[in-house]
Length: 377
Image 1: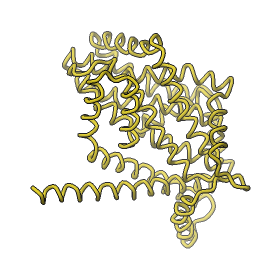
Image 2 (image 1 turned 180 degrees about the horizontal axis):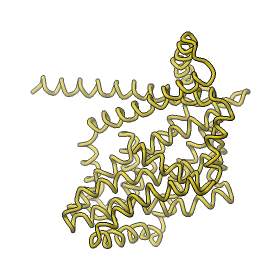
Image 3 (image 1 turned 45 degrees about the vertical axis):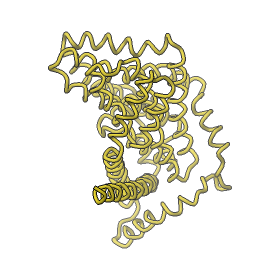
């Protein structure tokens, strides 16, 4: 028994060290992405984001990108890297980052489809999944127009970035971590130069390396943290919700998401419990909101690897969008009931007409965003 315990502890330490190594690989990936985009030239980036010049097209880009990669963390990290390289203007990145918040909710909705043949359980599971959808849709409906008219989020983020400091005389963010992250990217650049790759070709290769490292590292961080924490996640949620939830549930949802680096894991864990009637929608809702806050850690981590202060600003925009949104929507009982009511209403209709589920998922998360990207230029 003692040998098994020691082996278990050793395995835990190995996984923890592996997560730290993967986190370093993630930061190197963000730096490689930033360097690669910069190497492609201004004309390339201008043409790349020409379609997203309309804020609503940018919103659709964020939704679609997140649905395609099935991870808002990847989308957010990429956007932070692009803004940090100076390739993507902050005002265009804000709608994209908000769109990523909407796109990430499709994972829960897909998870609820496992109960499709069990009518009552499906109604509860589908409502539990789509309350996340409706919260993010409502939040974007309020704060995107507010940001476009007043720049509330970006002003708050810029003020916070200025307070944090770390901006040197060159306008670049100074951090010892950057030197450590830049070292392997500089090595890759030297290796590419030695093989004759230069200019745009080097930029494309660095871009590919960066995206690969971001995808790989986040996927394996999530996998390892899930293995380390999944049992604890379920116990923590059960312990909190047995006492009624509230602000404590929001805090636990945020903490779990920061730990496992995936809001989808936090919220997906609750779907079976909601379907079984173990927890109610009302009690599960604050955990979902906390997961929204916790997922912003990825963008903040990514900003540590960027040279331009705007990378930190867009990461803080993401944080403020979720923190202020959760505060507004949860603290006012009338507003708190809206996402829950919409989710329950849609679930009742989906229970009767299963075809509505296909229309909702494919239409809402794929077709409408594609139309938005193509039509709104």
